Amino acid sequence: MSAIAKTRPVDFHQYLGRTVAPRDFAGLVDIAAKEVAAKNFSVNLRLFWNHLWDTYEGFESTLQQKEIVKLAPAYNKLCEIWKPLEDYRLSLQKALARGTLPTIQPVEPKKEEGVQPSTIAETVIAHKREKVEEADHQTFWWDPFKFKEKSHPALWFADVTEIGFLAYEGGLRAAGIESVGIPAIDGLGLGFSILGGLFYILTGFIVIANAKRATKNNDALLKMRMWAMGVLYIGIGCIILLTELLKYVGLGGFFAANPWLLPALFFIPCIVNLMEVSKRLIPYAQGKDLVSRLNLQGALKILNSNDANWKEALLEHLKAFDLSKFDQGENMKQLLRAESRANNPREIMRKRAELLGQKMEDFQMEIGVRAGLEAFELMILLLKLKEGEEVNEEEIKNEIRERIQNLDAENTRWWRIQKLRFLQQAFVFCFFIATMTTTLGPYSHQVQEQTFGRIYLAMAVQRTIPTYLDAFCPFERNDTLVVNRADDESVFKDLPALASS
Image (cartoon, rainbow, N blue to C red; front, side):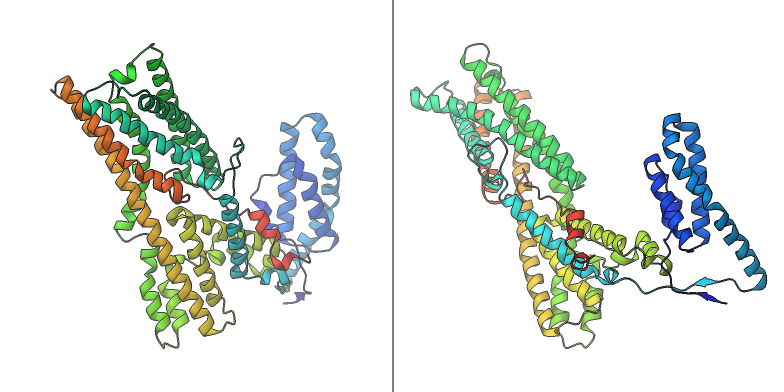
């Protein structure tokens, strides 16, 4: 068989299954015309021509006449390239009959395609770390004092005022009195209730702002939880504020007459948080979470051994990272085919950047942003080994050891906080059960009041847990500070091989 000289025809396979919009029609006709002019004929080019022709016929039945007129120049150009394509089809028939059907040799990929996933991953991690820095310094737009959102006072002010209110109300009920009798203390109790309602509303808006980031990150579980929590916090704040104001101006005592209401209000976000934390802790308890599957101690043993095949053994041991997906997914296989990869280097890089960016988000969803960053850094080192990059063995071994130790420490911290969150929600759940049992049980009013008082005091104590989390654990607390994903387009623009293209 004869061979055509090395050429770079457009891979029309990628267009054949797509619906063509009217705004794209002229541009696609231009692409086909340029290939015909360059004599880059192929069977797919002819199929692409047929696809455009069928599309235009569809336009005639769906578009208005003025829109059809706009497409007329492109349609005329499409008709002009019919004859060369028909001649190509006839030449194929003749060549097939003679047994001299030409073939197209694969060409060498352009230099941009040589950028390995590990290099792209390094760019992704640089962008993600920048996003973490941005989150550290974010301010809420309505905040005139420019407080950092990660330590936004609305969050822990809400906790502190809530502790004060619960302690005040609990003390009164447990003692069987309506007020302390000291104006300053009674006024402080009123202040705690009103401020608590205001700060709950404020917290709701902060949570909704983070819910929007979770939505952009495609984190479905976190998105639903944060939206639900934000709306609930605003609702709880409005109810507490309104009820307290009505009580103190003498227009109603619904809150005072129904002490079960407050535990019931707290029970709703408790259920939302409890479901989310449980969904995380169950795989952890079963040893099916990411770090358990990686078995970091086993990886350290391989690194410390004198096995000549330690690289292969380490890659096999840490296979939970699933390093194959960056070049073996169905879309990547199509892009990496011999006849198309040289013509799509930028698309290959875009796809790799997209896959690696999502991998970083998967780590963040599973083990939080801090441990997720360490896991991603470790994965980059493994990618370098997998790609056969020339490295100093001792140096990369030390780097891998450091990353494993960092990942182990951050992962331990992450799960410790998740257990603390679970404990807090379990307390709230128990308070709700105790409250409803007291409310519905055959107890005297005095016994009920004393029991409610003790429950309020216990709730005040357990509120120290979210206060600690809100003040010191911005990325792990119930009202999570969400870090935006690394923007795929920004990552792509920063890839070193594209600087001169």
